[in-house]
Length: 468
Image (cartoon, rainbow, N blue to C red; front, side, top):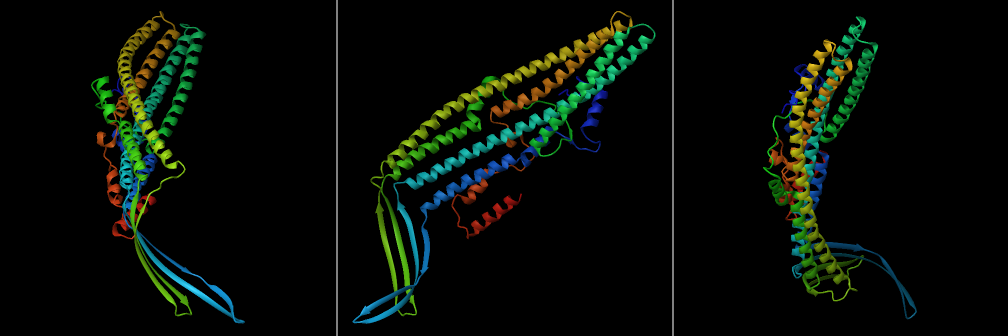
């Protein structure tokens, strides 16, 4: 990349580095910035928590296949007054009862297991959503990085332009003193200098805005940014980019898992309309305060049940599940066409940026040749001060256009990666500790109890996450 070469002279390069950061600052590459954005993104943390919640859906549904054990206790008081043969008696009783029950689902036509499978598909879908968020975070960081680089060069270019026009104004005044030019020439140089100072102020304002965007995207202020030297490897053609996109993009994978979830929900709804079998056992103890009376009880029962009629609710839920399934299937069609359009558009923008960059190089070369010639002609009196200023402005515009085109080229290249589903920390080989979506899932998928060792370990993990 010629970010600090063709567009600006070596003296301007020093100004850029001075403006960017103190001399003791550590140079920061694009990879460094992307790594920091990955580590400090609150959006990623938010969606990781959403994924953990989806993991817990699997555990909560799986737990329905296990025994449900509950205890109950009650204490009360009662007063009885009775009359027998003219004698009135009062009695007070304080019953105390304690009970323990256990129930387990033996068979429900497979409805609960289908619910577990649907929850697992939902987890896989949520993982793809997390990858999509990761791509957006990294692409935003790329844009912020290139915008700061671009605007810093705009500021350096503007400062260089102010210095050049100041010299032109000084020369115009000297020539006016000796009668070589008129007052009009001096006024034109003064007007152009005021305009260049206004442009410089605007460039500094844009730089401040870009730095604020950088802070939002990366989590810190930009330091001494080092321009990248080569574009990332993408695809060889538009067709290749599109093919990878419809096969690999997280949105297409998410849509596929959503369809599978919806289909499992249809089967689960159908299965829930059938009978279910459960085993239930209870034990109880009843005693009376200030009395020797007591009773013990226990029972074991095998229960078979099925809902026959519920006002049409069961069939409505089945039709609703089918409608959701059809919607997800149609959604896959929409997602596929959107990805084809996005990949094609990203590839077109990259090709356009490449062509614009090449044209900018030729424009700069021609504008500099023209400027040098017009300046020489002006010393001989064949050109006016305005001609020189206009030629200098054309060089400035060409250099600014190249800076912008080069920044656009890099953003477009990373946008192609994002359209292909490859703008991830793993694919870019960023130096970060990558988030493992399976680690938490593997700990909770078997629904560990709160007081078990695994449950206590999970509690410590969640507490640590909450403190971060």
